[in-house]
Length: 94
Image (cartoon, rainbow, N blue to C red; front, side):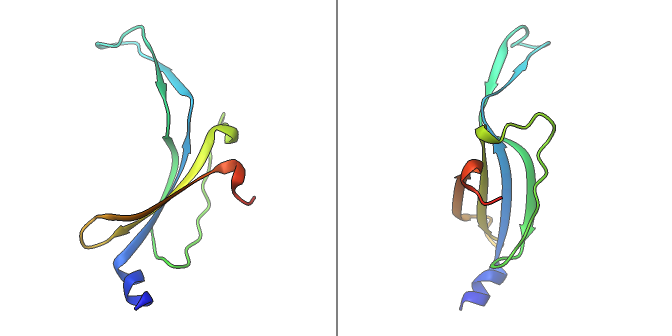
């Protein structure tokens, strides 16, 4: 049944941002500028499906035009991800 499945699953939600970079000051990449995509800027979970609400808090300097919301459902017993949805933040309702 749907309610039995909901009890076996957990929902996680991430706010991600693309086109970030960092300057490396030590180690084998010292002096290099590294590019980063799909950087998790905020994360919530585990939440109880099917009706879960969450407020994600973007950090200072966050660029909504380069960001997405990623939600995934995980089977609690096995840890397997059973579904993933990614939506650009610009397409999400305010």
